Amino acid sequence: MKALLARFYIDPYLLMLLGTVVLASFLPPTGIWAPISGIVADIGIMVLFFLHGARLSRQAVWDGARNWRLHLAVAAMTFAVFPLLGTGIQVVPGLDRELATGLLFLTLLPSTVQSSIGFTAIARGNVAAAVCSASFSNLAGILLTPLLVAMLITGKSGGVSGHMVLTIVGQLLLPFLAGHLLRPWIGAWVTRQKQMLAVVDKGSILMVVYAAFGAAVADGLWSRVSVRDLAVILLLSVAVLAVVMGIARVTALVMKLPRADAIVLQFCGSKKSLASGVPMAGVLFAPEQVGAILLPVVIFHQVQLVICAVLAQRYRVAAEKAESSGGASPEPLVT
Image (cartoon, rainbow, N blue to C red; front, side):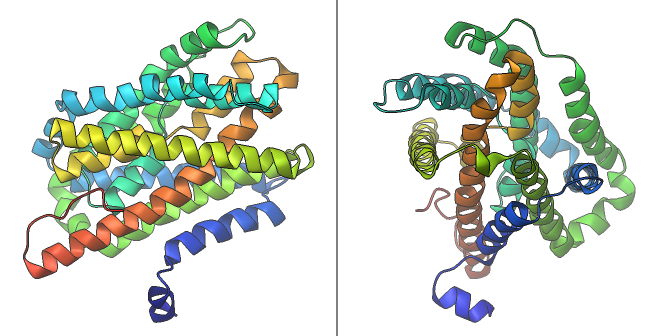
């Protein structure tokens, strides 16, 4: 089967992602299974961060945290380039007003964390820098996203609670720090378990996709939109993502970033967080608006996962080929 898929240039992981979306559409987690799927996804994320914390050396973590040029570039993509594109979308003729507002809200969100780091790890990028950039983006988004919504969208008054801060700290930073503190005892063993890390990287992303998309389906996603609405949002999502990734590539070349950092800029700088978008929308908008506001966020989330999964696998294959041949590191942003 693997040989057949390789012959037709079909990525097995892409099929797994699409299969997960189909499964969530027909068998979304409902009843008692809804919170269970969310808990399993959260555990997978925590295990992922714990293992990466155990694998990374202290020097790698320090280098990742002090890479301020990279972090500023990611922040600029997330909170400047994206909002400019979102503002431009508002003038697209024939676009439903609520869907246009949802697309604008999408561009104001912080970067996603777990998939950014997971794809960075798959692509052999700078995982330490990805952890810092994605975490910084989410923490900054707690303040910047409501401010941008207040400036660009008429939403209801209110702010974002400290629950998101606790979630970021509890699910991401604390497991990462725990794994890193235990590195002297388990670091060598974890480093040898490359297959296990690959399973956790991909498995945690698949579980997050199933839980997030399944929750939207269970809430009546497919009964509220037309085929035309879906097509418009899908096309605009692909266009926005393509433009942002193109800008990220040019920026990496201009900044002369090394391969590992260029991968971080592309994956962390091109993502938008569904996990942050859902609670923020509930706080910043009236209840009757939330459904339409979140639809573009859900669709863009799937688009970015599928496209980035393909790119991450290609980057990984290119890196492995370079390593096996003993050559120099390949160009990171292959097409």
